Length: 283
Length: 269
Ligand SMILES: Nc1ncnc2c1ncn2[C@@H]1O[C@H](COP(=O)(O)OP(=O)(O)O)[C@@H](O)[C@H]1O
Ligand SMILES: [Mg+2]
Image (tube, rainbow over all chains, first blue to last red; front, side, top):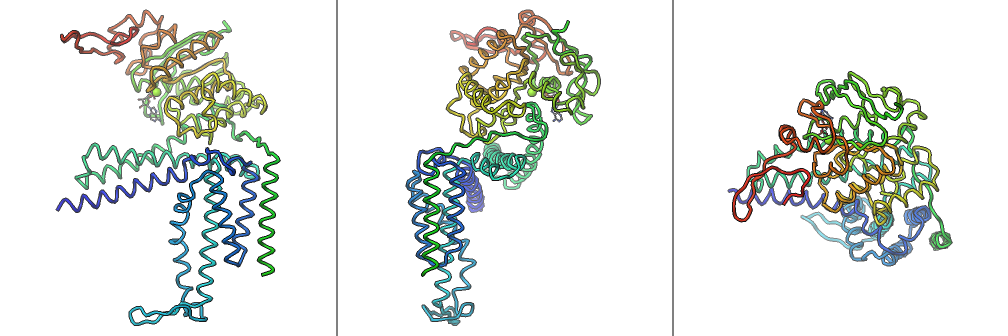
């Protein structure tokens, strides 16, 4: 009787913990941003502009091969930036299907998108026909999503978040907003760590969370308590800011140093986007 | 008389008006002094340092800093605020609170930049301060992902970059390994030799012989029960024991059980 309960709670606990670990490692760690590689060596401003151009191109093109080219370029850049391509593929491709299939699936079929049949089959006596336009449209959509997601992930993997925030400032976002984003980010990290610690603490105190009820109460209480701690912390952070001379308008470091390499990169990116657009237009 | 930096008269403070944290404190601190404030947890040490840093204000009594009363509205004007912030720096007990910028470099730069120091000078200070605290290799890291010892050094660096006349340290050595403790003590002693005033809150009696000439002992009633020369206070065993600052230890020596007190100044064997 107690065995299946254990298995279930273990499973839930493990998935929560691994989700948190993923959140921390994937989005908050800067392991790849600190490596040496092509993208890491570029000025974040130039990198952000060029990736924005790539993104616009990927979204506007209507040809699968051309978008595929951009996707290939993205993988090449990942390789040149010392990101293991397999890891990169897993990270991006894993959640793309989930996301896009839900939207795309209905449009595959003849009821939604009529046209020449590619493949027909029977499910529970209802015949379904996948049509050529439906298939092409879905393929285009999936490739487009895959490319866009990969571009965004690649940019965020190879750029320290402090630099991304600085880019925001260069592009005219007010410093107070940037500081707020940066702090929320930090709270997210502290919050994830705290919840992780609480789970471990509860487990060590209550054994293997054998008394389900008891364990859950402690978790609930701790989460509320964590929230209180977080709000109290923000008051204290405000004092820490005051203590170092903050008077309402934060001043942060600015200087970025652009090199000729950055200009070459930007020129290259513009040429790539322009020729893709041109091909897409003439095809 | 103008070398008095802080003068506290019957200072009382409570959080939210109902949690008393300081209940009548008198204190005079002069320029260049090395002071330690010792007391068990919850005796009001952090509260005192925040009052001295003009972050909170007494309910009764008053704090005078550099000859002017610290009042709720005395730092509304940016110029006055900055003049005070340039002179007094607080290293918070919790380094996670103190470090709120996206990178170590920006955290060190934060103080000087707010205080209007030019960027080239800020860059120079970052390099200098990073060297003093041996954190050059951490400059591009995210502060909250560092180890506790690294965080503490970055926190000190972020205050050192302001180059204040008065340093307030809140439990600067708590939870650190012996080598890092050594570095921090050396830093404090050196700063004092350069003429800086040092006020440290701690309950680590092993370090106060070096970092303080004068010690104030806080008791459970959140008052000063004793103030005096470090040696004299340290020799008063019953006082320290009554205030939870030392405790009796049981040891094995050469196979025999034996009970003795924890000696504050001698390394513990
Ligand atoms: N934010 C707060 N809200 C309510 N009470 C507090 C708060 N901070 C501290 N206190 C109370 O004030 C007293 C003194 O705390 P503190 O100055 O942090 O002591 P110490 O630094 O010596 O450990 C304690 O009794 C503590 O419970
Ligand atoms: Mg304290």
